[in-house]
Length: 173
Image (tube, rainbow, N blue to C red):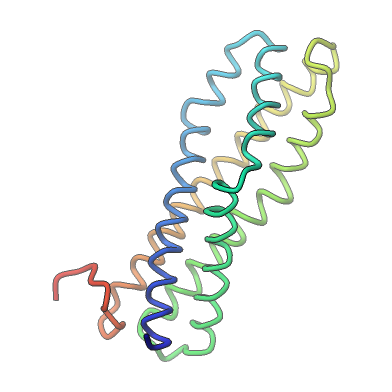
């Protein structure tokens, strides 16, 4: 397998991973957070606290961080081969996933999760934190959703570029 074949495969799996992550985030943005907000405050907090514990598992991490690794690899390839077809899509797709998904998660969503983890769901402080959490966490999640979708599209478009090694054919030639 050549380097180009390997990069194409990594780009394809990165696009798929970004799409899976986008779907998870979309579910939270479109209905999960609204459902939690409709529950009694203490129950909503407890449910989200359990979600935040349960999401820390090898299957989610494999897709979430595996896609980040793939994004870094295809970005590096794109920068090292700027003349290659699809280089711009590899660079922008990888950057979009890393900044809009990984960085936003680490700098915005995780700190909010950590703050929520420390509150007693039945306390007055819990209610105050929950109200702020729902608004801010969901807003940042909308951004993560859009970034993951955009990364998927950009990586797929990079694979569509004429002349890109098409061992895995995504378009009719």
